[in-house]
Length: 105
Image (cartoon, rainbow, N blue to C red; front, side):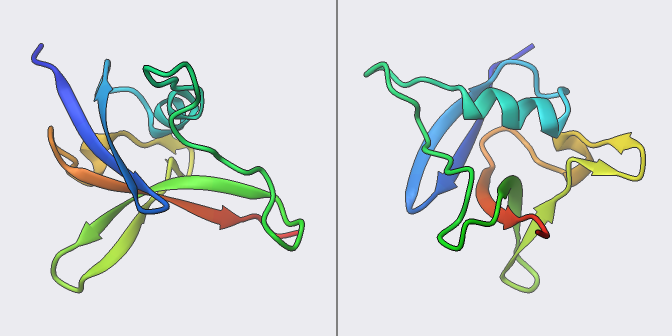
């Protein structure tokens, strides 16, 4: 299998991230990203667990929809079905975004 890369943007910072298994679920990919460490030994992205108001945060991948110029959230699960990058037509070299989603409190 060829190497698979995504350009991942969060808070105006874009990082080229190698995805070891592009067929992995989005939940597993997000978990791996939360723990990814850069060459400097620090976490690549800082994921606060709560927002300014104290509400818990969860994070999702999103992809830009070129037809409407809006970000479309890539839900990790639809019903009981775990979703993968392929379910959202994400291809090698695509840019995806990380977006926080406050959970209802």
